Length: 244
Length: 332
Ligand SMILES: Nc1ncnc2c1ncn2[C@@H]1O[C@H](COP(=O)(O)OP(=O)(O)OP(=O)(O)O)[C@@H](O)[C@H]1O
Ligand SMILES: [Mg+2]
Image 1 (cartoon, rainbow over the protein chains, first blue to last red):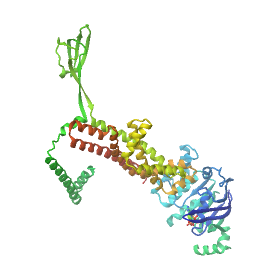
Image 2 (cartoon, helix red, strand yellow):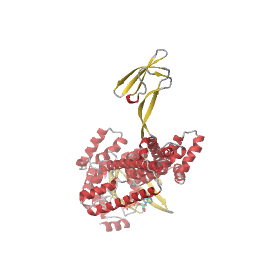
Image 3 (cartoon, rainbow over the protein chains, first blue to last red):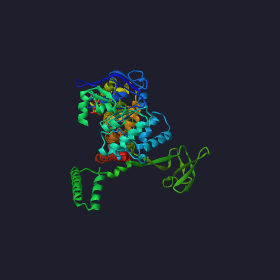
Image 4 (cartoon, rainbow over the protein chains, first blue to last red):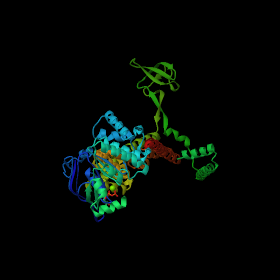
């Protein structure tokens, strides 16, 4: 589903060059749940943002469902419809009600009728467990509820892949569970997911594969059992000691 | 401006909030003392206040004298209510009728008339120069605001565009306009562009005001757009919207709410700045005031009235904006 080959992303600014992603080669199969972990600043977010074209690549290739993002002729807007993204800060549209948050892109991008979009929106709100809030504005929702709306908003576009960038990091501890629950359900339904998270429990339970990044490089890759019990690389061992 | 003051006093009385109430009373006292001082000062210079001459420059009763266009004789005067119908027989045996106000009839039945004699008059209400000037100022400012908003929106978007030329051009325009006096711009528009492009003084005046306002609006809009968190654009793009769609549906509606107060300030300034177009002989409120003064010599009264009319326009506008702001606040 996603193939990245020798992906590099460098930021040049204020006289210094940052190699945020430095030669990552990794693939994600259809229906697979891949969890990316690594210390802060290791380039996890940047890698994820490259996957849906929010960052332009410096070099290398990304193929999403066969489409090459590095190709100048690729219409990135078309790619992004197929790749849903959930942000750490939710990024709901504050001037729209919850339902409108779900409806807008369906109508504007997918050209669905209002009726159809609302039906789909309500269905998804029910699925993430906040059907009764459809007329509220995002600001009046708790963090956990907002993040669930954000997940529903991405799902409304019927993406083939869902990207999550630390979806629970901005949440109060008591709300982390409800969001993870929605993500687990998605995984069970066979959604292809790439998740950046510090929730090791989630990685263990749900991930098919774990990628460990450090300094922009993919340091270790493997199944959760392998990664959590028997990591090969010293840096991964060190990191696990700190977080577990 | 004054209404909040009265509101405070009223509130003080109703809520028995004595402390605030007495402070407001002090404010009113000071204002009253200043007014009294001015009054005494004008007494000293022996100025003859003629407020009674002012109303006619808002609205006046215009007398229309009806005259006979030929020599003839009055045959009949029919009175019906307030109007009278006078029938006149000409020398060619031709009867013509004239309608005038009943009280103004100046002829009698069988009276012989010569060409040009007056029969009576009719009255109509006419708009005086001050009201007319107010109207000109109003629509001039409205047109300039509208065009200024459009110019400002386009320039503001260019200002943050990724295209370097667009960015440089918009900065060039903004810097030139903000770095030169409006009065000079108006002269350039009128004398230079007006001559080169052969445009009328009204078009020149509106363009100068619109282009002036546009530069300020552009900066307001740029700041408004940049104040929206980056995540909003990213969320919109990640849903597959292109940049124009994200701007129209996500960024601009949010930015608009934030820029409404500074935008309102800009348009209020524009109403006031529009008084400068009187220098290119556009008969706006200020020019009308000057014209009325030359015929009445009621200099003080007219300038006070003109100021009051500007105050009226600007406070109505700020009330309207405040209302819109309250409407938009539902999602906060
Ligand atoms: N827009 C940018 N401009 C310049 N440097 C950037 C930019 N975005 C990220 N970086 C740099 O790239 C590196 C990787 O950042 P990234 O956000 O991908 O790390 P991360 O693994 O997601 O960290 P965290 O766990 O803190 O979210 C960091 O050194 C960061 O400072
Ligand atoms: Mg990150």
